[in-house]
Image 1 (cartoon, rainbow over the protein chains, first blue to last red):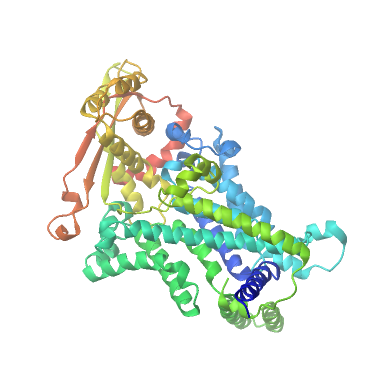
Image 2: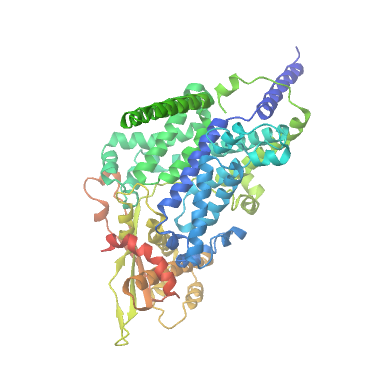
Length: 362
Length: 263
């Protein structure tokens, strides 16, 4: 076979692979369902932990930051949370919390996801002084998720679609939330969004690692000691002290943070290194969350790492959690039986029924 | 996305329509990624060829991001923002000057023991960060201007005075603008704090910022952050910001939240 023929054959194979990946089916629907739940939880967490001080940080009591606000240009969105009425602000704030819950439970997911992305942007940009990069990655991820199907699993949308009777025309399809656009369009769109998200994560980790690697303190293996000594990151000072007082721990953790990010993208290429990369990066974020008091930043990051966990692993996890829930329900049911002798028969029946339902859902 | 997914993938024929959609989509994704990568990365010839303004117009605000977190140097400074106010005693009509209050101490107390601290634990702290940075850029002549009191002279004149100072060590016009923005933020923060705390008419406020370095790793057993020497930046008196009783009331959740730590 000539060289050109070989090249042509290779090209045909490569194009075939790309086309099949894009058009055969929507990829990573389990991982994306996990991303949806986790990023929704991060948004809800931000809203809840700032609820008591909401007026002073973003609301009508935040005019102390006015001089800084002129810096950001988010167009019409700037007006969403403006205004001097605390009641009106609180109502909008509560509505945004409801949107976050809708994203978590997967209710009208595509619209809810878009609303959460724009709503959180409108809110946090009211006070960019106190924001962090978690806001940015959450917004980027949520916007890309609008292109994807993120409610295929563990969602109210999926349950409604499962239960609905077939047929009924366009209006019925919209009401139930069944796909109305052709799959030759929606499947490639989903996969394009997924690819963009994955590449965004690669850029994020690779850049973070390379910028760190330039620094003397990172090279010297003591970088983590410095921020962990500050009151700014002293949620549990004794825990930070425990880590920084041991030179081996400091250096190991400092290098770990650099290398796990640097090799994240290439690590995904092999099944074994993929597990090391994903578990390692999650551990790093859990460390940041606990030691530095940045839980929502970390959760926003972990949310999108979920797309790199295989469908097989997610299904095993789903089965495991399902069995746990089933056992808990079972135990609760049996206790209820013991408590009420008179209603024993009906309670057992009900327990059995939920058990059947639960196993059918798996 | 993973190897396991691929194993079950069958090569069903891809429709012509899907093919017409997917290749342009792939191109869009790749161009988008290239733009993001250029934005995130350091300056290089490709970035210069594309132009910073072109990149910015695509990235901002929806894809805004910066991954130089703790890099190349991790955060190693502790800062403070202290405020005090001149309040008018309504009975005597005389002005009284309050004690200095360190707002960052209060914010520290919001973090200690709280696994999910609210964002206001960064309000005075980050204001102090920016003020310290800007003061580092000012020449000594400019600092003298900043340290001057503005009791009756309009604060707007400070800009002209800062810009009038020439010389190689003088801060640029954009740096001066940035300082004046944080001057407004710090003055407003001080005014709100004073109005919510002392319940009297606030006429003037003053703030000052400090900075100290975490001792180097080698010296960690000999000395601690709290013993580290502070560099203090002083600023003159400023007119109180325009505040209404309603907004002061709404701001007071911050004052209550940090109360324990400033005492």
